[in-house]
Amino acid sequence: MASISTHNGKDPRKGNRIMIAGLSFQVATLLGFIILATDFAWRTYSGRTHLGQIAPNQQQTRLRRSWPFNAFLVALSLSTLCIFTRCVFRVAELSEGWRGYLATTQKYFIGLEGAVIVASVLLLNMFHPDMCFKDAIDARVAQPSQKTWYGKTRNAVMAHHGADESNTELVGFNNRDGKYRA
Image (cartoon, rainbow, N blue to C red; front, side):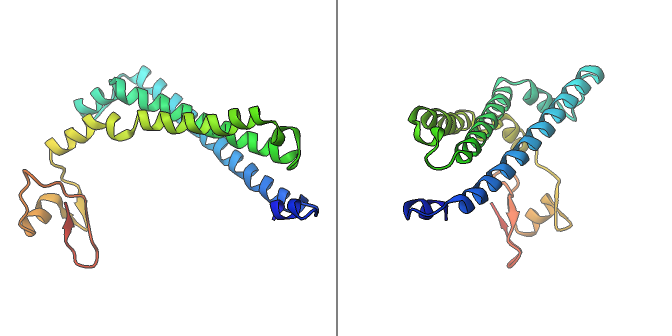
């Protein structure tokens, strides 16, 4: 709406206000997420420090102390801050209008729009959860879970369908035919 109005020589304020409202809501919710995540991290860290290492098993303790897991947490935090920076920049940019200083200065656009998103994508690809949680995934496969799906244990479901526990990983059901997907 704002872009068409601008190109047609009309007043783009209505479209700009809608976009700024949406981006402001996005900034507010992301800021709320950052505050809650920081509070959770602080409480988890301080609780672990005061109460000692409380973990159900050794694999989880090893995972929490591993370099890949901690690198993933740092990458996720930095990626979130990069995305937050871009959102704040977009609100400031659109507040000035389509022909404002921030919208027409390429170095700000490259640095605060493109570079932060590229950094975010690179961080999350370099420290992908599949690579960083590999020890946890390998531990789950080595020790079969007794979690239930629709009131049946994993072993009962696999026995019902004739699956061999040693070489099959149950990942879910299809509700229509009741068969597991490995």
